[in-house]
Amino acid sequence: MTPSPAEAPADLVITGCTVLLHDDQERIGFEEDAAIVVRGGVVEAVTTADAVRGRPAVELLDASGQVALPGLVNCHTHAPMVALRGVAEDLPTEEWFNDVVWPVESNLTEKDVELGAWLACAEMIRGGVTCFADHYFSMDAVAAVVGECGIRAHLGEAYFSSQGPQGREKSLEFALRHRGGADGRITTTLAPHAPYTVDDADLAATAELAAEHGLPVHLHAAENRDQAETSLARHGVTPIEVLRRTGILDVDVLIAHGTGILDRDLPALRDASGRTTVATAPRGYLKFAWPTTTPVRALHDIGIPVGLATDGAASNNSLDVWESMALTALLQKSTTGDPRWLTSRQALHHATLQSARAIGLGDTLGTLAPGRRADIILIDLTGPHTQPVHDLAATLVHSARSSDVRTTIVDGRILMRDRELLTIDVPAVVRELGERLPALLDRSHGGKIQEYDT
Image (cartoon, rainbow, N blue to C red; front, top):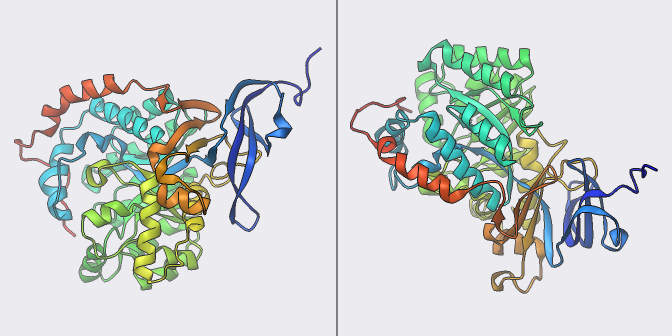
């Protein structure tokens, strides 16, 4: 006799943990001594540990004393840039681009991108990131790595107007070819670089392609206050107003950084007919000594989701979304002058459900509930730096570290168990990447892929 679905073994049962939950008012809470049942890559049930005692499962994880969270989402990064970690330090933005990063990127080969992606995925999986939004070059290589290592990704092939129409066409071709790839773990986007490197005609064409093919757009815009002021001086409009007049705000768009968003931009963002979201990566803003950060509170007040991000490791030195969560909370308190904003619970909401919404996956990721994809991380809070626990949300945001992530699961598949990566050979990647670094870092040719002039 074939057992009924209720009697058939679950694929995975996680038991004994405390689970972060979202209620129907979008508040977070915690359920102790809980269990999560996974079947077919989806959360089937979040229940009590007693309710699953003795229940058959292909795999049983005893997570006693651990906290289960939805996997973190890195809403904007350039994963292969881990190969450039530390090569351009203590520089203003213009010198960072023109003197180091863009000359080095002119050396990039597809193999460099592949190895960087492997190393980045290893770092993110170890830090509890189960999905990342990437915006870079040679993205076929990144898609292949995502397919093999088991992580989830939202990918776009970046382009500049200096590449001619071929850049835009390549971005579209990539998005169409890889949409739904890796057993559905890959979603795709069009990826113009920014309003200062992509002209109005290309942005308008991108908006038309996005509408025609049902694709979102992911780009940098109003990254810092200098860009906004330069755009106003040269063109009489802000970068956000450029997005409005070219139609980008009429389609779904993820805006990276936005620390240069001005008060005059808020109506355009509020009234956008597409789904408009913003990704904030605060560590890099501090490193570049930018005078402002993403205006999270103002964006919240007009209904714009803000997801957490790291940017690339060439500017941020790390792909640690856990750190981005803590820094976002602290910077918002500092810049608003209000210790009640962001609270730890609000920060956790940004790290989970809002980050999922930022990349257009708010209906499938971001919360542990029946029907959601089983992207789950288990956090160990037994270390001395996280004890005692008086306020679990505060402990997670301000005391825990990415190294406290013990287990990382995507689509019900365990990618890291007890800190051991199961799908990536890090020493082999590091060894091969090290052999390629001299050629990658050579700047003697004097060329660069683009000019930063804002």
